[in-house]
Amino acid sequence: MKPPAIEIRGLRKRYGDALALDGVDLAVSEGSVFGFLGPNGAGKTTTLRILTGLARADAGDARILGEPVGSAAVRRMVGFLPDVPGFYAWMTAPEYLRFIGGLFGLAGRDLDSRAHMLLEMAGLAGVKTRIGGYSRGMKQRLGVAQALMNAPRLLMLDEPTSALDPLGRKEVLEMIAALGGRTTVFFSTHILADAERVCDTVAILAHGRVVAQASMAELKTRHGAYGLALAVEGDSHPFVQELRQAPWVSSLRTVEGNEMRLTVTDLGVARRAVPEMVARYGLGLRTFETTELGLEEVFVELVGGGR
Image 1 (tube, rainbow, N blue to C red):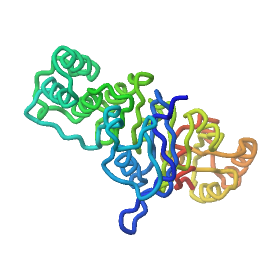
Image 2: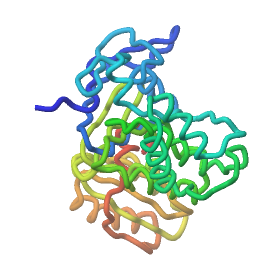
Image 3: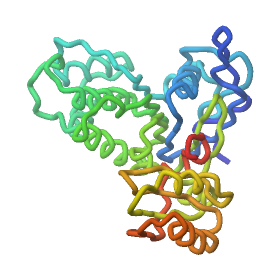
């Protein structure tokens, strides 16, 4: 039986008085595109730093493909892109990838062919501009390419889309999605739409602990089983306040004006109670429909802040 791509047990890390990781347990199957989700400060970057050998845990165990983190064997099997990658601005992309490949012992035709293949994948083949003139999205795509130069079995990316414009995010996400099944991709993000778009499995980290890990479909089914879209006319403030306190409401967020998105634990109760409450407060009911539950609603329910 093959070991998981990543296996973490009881990982703890403290910085002074701040507890960054509080007993993290995690298992990532080989070949998956795995989203490591959480709000800023949840401990995502700390976990990645430990996995890459850039930091040491205070307690617990972390293994990559069955090997202890930080070992020479692991370094040969892993590619990594930090949240703010650094480049030599005066190089072109082919020069940079050949430089990186040389560090891994590649040379000659093997080096040239791998660099060319990855530039094609990144959409940078034929670009003559030096890296200093690249957009942020182009740099991120080049960063993913350089992290793949050693043909890693595991690619780890720290917030790869966090500072990109919509076009840059789309390009990087398409590149990540294309890697599914070819290598294991483990990337941290607080942008839920990105994970929902490309991941087959996710884990949600909050306050230094993993609060959920499952496939995307299972996560949506298991937490907050029903979604509702609701729009009313009139002064909705007291109505919303009562709705937030209803025991069958898992989370509620206002979208725009008097439009709301709810997750509820009992759809039958919600369908009876909401119209009654609307009538009692003298409001008009403009929209009331069941919706497909999104990752954002699940995230809010697990991490907090939904009520």
